[in-house]
Length: 249
Image (cartoon, rainbow, N blue to C red; front, side):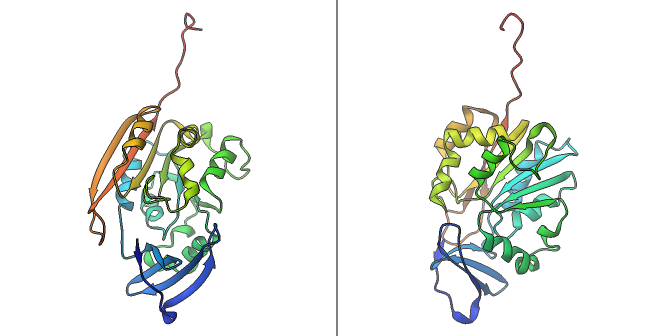
């Protein structure tokens, strides 16, 4: 994050965010920036680990041809574009709380990609918070979301700069035990949960070990001014169901 006041001639649009914050979209050489107040929260010039996160989420599913993905946090569409490059992905549900970010992806950010990601017929956008989406999914109150075996094969989180660096305070619940339960139960057995962080997250790693399998912490070097030069990716897989024997029943 960095602080940088907007110049009026650079401003393309303004909007109110989901928590009442003032959002500003401005053009910069070679791309765009989104500001919340005076702080840049998303910049097309400061790419992190989107492609690596997509790869980490997909590699364990390399033998599948029916990959369904829940992607939380649209940003400027870079992670979504990376996911869509995989022809074995058949559906992506994108959960984004900010109506403005969805609108700007449709009206401006398509120029950042070879093809506008939101135009892909595999993509379905849901303007709501992830916690609300997970609850609605579990209680089957999303009429337009019907998946085989009632779960996703991959969930990719790009909501925050990590559990210790939240962009929205309300997102803290997603990394709690209750939040991880919601994420776990939204995955099919063997499905993959993956997220990135700008720093190491020891507490999250321990929580993941308590309920998932095949836990991995992957360190990615990045060239982002003002950062420590490393991103951390976390991947976990939902355990298969436990089948009790007759003697155990």
